[in-house]
Image (tube, rainbow, N blue to C red; front, side):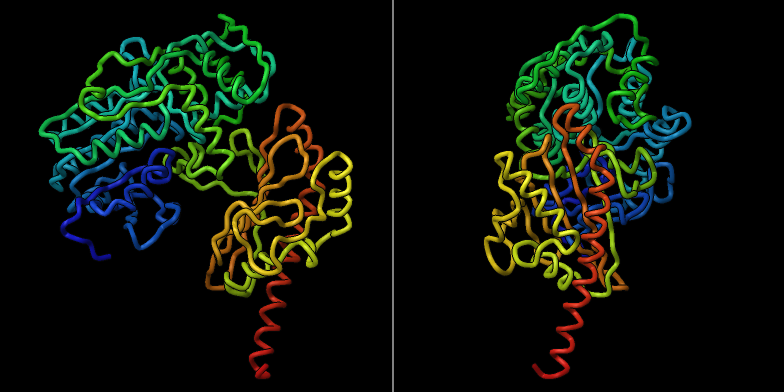
Length: 494
């Protein structure tokens, strides 16, 4: 693709990860920058458009790095190997050394790295590895700006998801002593502000900035504050008997933390992570919020939308894209079903946008009606409100028991359930054109409220699978029928 020579050229690694996935759309919208993403599989970079470039490669392949860094002014290094197999420390060091060599060869003017707060002495293997990577990047001769952060609070970050899973699932907790470790949490929005500020400044030499919110707490305090804002009562009794290994096993039993990351991450939670250098406050006109406000923002984000990026979507930590009919998305449960249809995405979208009301839900309508009557009897909205409009959809519309949350014609329909359930439910349809026609992806996402919510999901999983599998199959047939009818009308001149 052609690039504007007046724009600063940025290489973003880790675009499929949590931080990179949040930062990418912000950089793309900024007219000052041309963005190139490095990805092991370019198709994994979501929202791929003509507004940025994606190149294939990874930090363990020096030749691919040299090609990707050609012409780049600023390189963002958001890569780690903690989720991979083998010696992740050695892989991290090898990747950083390759990046340094390639950056020097390409004449890169600045490297930006996101590291972790905390002393290197006595810290975990994970924390030492992050510090080692920063030292390697700063040794390159290219000015390297390292931002060191404590717990990042935002929907989808691994630290936040551990906290929310523990709080949502366990009324009484006997966690390890690491819940008393001091930390200085920072909101994801503030991390992004710092990153954008560093990208926009010029540096003659390397620099380390420690960033965090305005107040300190510990993991116990985070859990208690999350519980307070969610209206949950939780009792916490830390115990000193759990080793890091046993802590990881315990955490794996009560949260869906990615197994390979569990123990490595747990070991780092024993380290206090608070700011000891205030240079970031002096050099940037950024005033981060406290952890209470950060949690409030995260909860509000969950109400407003699906997650833009999540730690478990970090392809760099797995190397493969997960797929399947049923999966766990941190504390949420999802049922994902796909159907290939021989029509365009526009036709499939229109067939879906007409669901509800007189058209109904195409499969087992009597069961939909029964569920609606049960909801009405309990004081809910039921299934008989119909549609706000006969044709088309707009955000905020009513469709039976659903509220339209997001619409992108020809691409996405997202509905939020207003029935009485022990949790929150979304139903999303996505439409993607391909050589055979269109792929319809249907996702049912359930956020359980407490243990009863989990029981509700698993108790009704099979009936829900039958109903929603039938729905997407019937939807595919309806789209093909509508397309055939339209073609027949055109052929007959009507």
